[in-house]
Image (tube, rainbow, N blue to C red; front, side, top):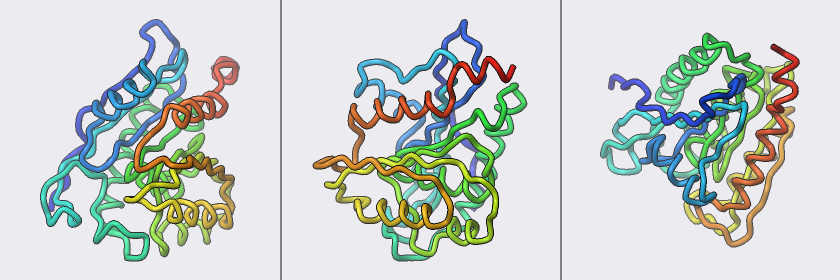
Length: 237
């Protein structure tokens, strides 16, 4: 199956600002970049926006998705099933990593240093971000994964076993009441990455199902500014 290119980008930034940093948020299965932006805007009652950071919400290409019996959906990669105890669909993951690498390279061509780029996402988007950063772009500023997981024998773990370099920090959030992506899957992912040299944090949200909360997004915003401070951006110009 020929994979289509990444869909429409929803981009949020101050028109008059010097955007010398970038945060890319990858949406969940079946969503769009604009849908993810709208969802966060509804939760916060405003856009997630920063004076010096451009926020990009890409849309995954539509492709047949096995857990939906082969129906087309906007997904970053295919899965054999929604479980952490099965093989990864590595062909579709690697294909999407190439597409998202083009997106990273476009930002670098626009003048943003690679160590001023964060990437992350919700659910499948967070899993995609972990593959992209920890296997192919270990010099990014950081990774965030919200209600996300990696499979037990993930290619990410195999890559990090052979790695000696400093790795991007991981910011992870997960609700204990998540019935789609179990909290234990996210916790196991965090422990595995920590054991392989990743500096990780896992923020637990009691009674939160497979969704985002205002507190969670506010914590994420604080972490984003910590990783991409305006002062550092000015001194690096």
